[in-house]
Length: 459
Image 1: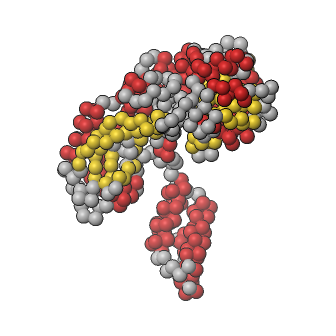
Image 2 (image 1 turned 120 degrees about the horizontal axis):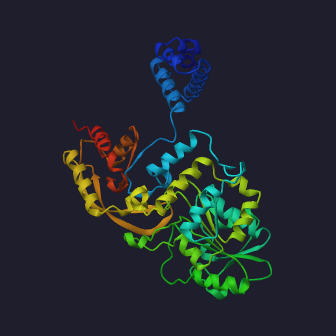
């Protein structure tokens, strides 16, 4: 081990290496020195574990790779061929061209984020989004915050701190990551009162739990799971009738958030924001970057008396949305206002793509890949915690062990594709790598074929 350690070059020796010296034109000297020291420290650790000392060339490459990785743009763009439209791990909803342009336009210069141009005095950032949301949903007032978890937290903290909120036992759920209704409730200072059973809850369960400390009745849409079989739940209509009887607001956590009728696209019915408001929910909460198809945001719409309380709460400042996403959300909502969401917003364009168009592209892919792949039937999913169990028919390009060159197992090929620029992400089923055209932008088809031909060694 000692001899291997002695073979490690010094910092100065590495700095004199031609390939390292070339880095000086692009990066500060201190940064390069720091990276070299970090690399050498790691090599000492590896040598202590009985690994051999790397060559000068190997060390130089590691240092180059380390600097490149440190300074490259992140997150990286990927080609999503998984067939999951709103892929949580791949950035959720891609944005429309108009949304991207609005965000760029707003970020390039100063803007009237919190300045009233008419009066010349301080204004509120909420005015830029409120009229749009009210027009689309029929709500009296609206507010946008960082994400849906923020929206629910702000609503519960503002209206139910040190009070009780009644939730069906089957809706005290985990939506994703650390977003668990009981924990959000605890963080807000509200007391969770569970009623009913996991599979069945009735209106009388709510009514029997109502007391002097009850601040709200909460419905949580089970966005990412389904309970089937012997079940019963209380409709929002029933809940609003009960809330009105006892003068208790009904809060509706819609999760994904939707403004279009999903049933028209062959999917199960997803509750819409405007339906929640028309039924009489005091507040409705949802995400902006899922079925809505915009940037990350939490949307709160409802009755003015409650929205005003949320706006004045100190937590609202901590959870507020920034200028760039505010511009993007506004542009996304305008698509709905103009009736062009299905053609302009990528999420809805993918959902509405016909099976005929997908098959045409899949066959074109197969032809470009010299028939080394197979086109098979499959399904796409909406994803993003939306419409669990609901799928769309699709055509998949299957690359199996018998496809392409020898040794190209599905896992090996998937790894090779992830190393491309941009990385290509598919899904593996048994011994096949499956690629779904539905979630690949048509304008990326030529690039995808180039990357696949390279991965499959097709000349």
